[in-house]
Image (cartoon, rainbow, N blue to C red; front, side, top):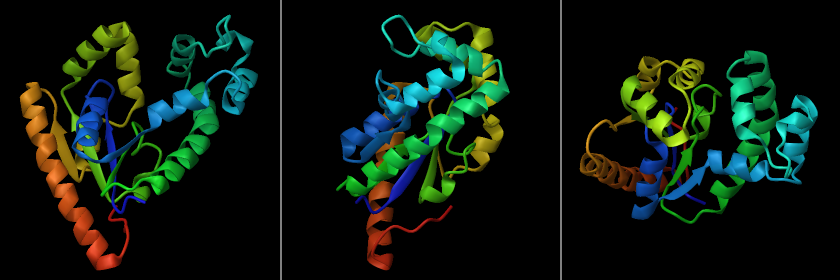
Length: 212
């Protein structure tokens, strides 16, 4: 098991996946809960069946796959629908995330959890890493990447913890509004710091301890 856990979070469009990929390339174990969510909602899975039972068969496309655009639109317009979806998704995502973290043999693991702070999972990790950029950059990136309208992106941002609070609760912060080379330099420094923290944590306690 990885002896040191880093919880990576940030607002939509901040660059979480890019940072996680770079840390993974440097040798960290990476578990992305967005990918787990997709895995758990493939056709034929119990989780998808529960979503369809709650939201109705219209939430599925003709081929039986989840209509993610429809679901996203519904949950970001209705707080009650969002809460129901989270009650279905979060428990199995968390269980599979922790199971896979326990199987890693890397010096440390990065758990990519977009709602890390909102869902009270900080106690699971040793450090909170926040990837940050100004809101206009978030909006521009998500509109370009996902084809959403600016209004849709603003609704998603409004549903997440305020940027200032996210930054205030970070143990480590990456500023991702600049050039790719600037981002890589920050990631490299953090990777070396995490290796040192993981070694110290292992030497002093014989295993992971939580600091959050």
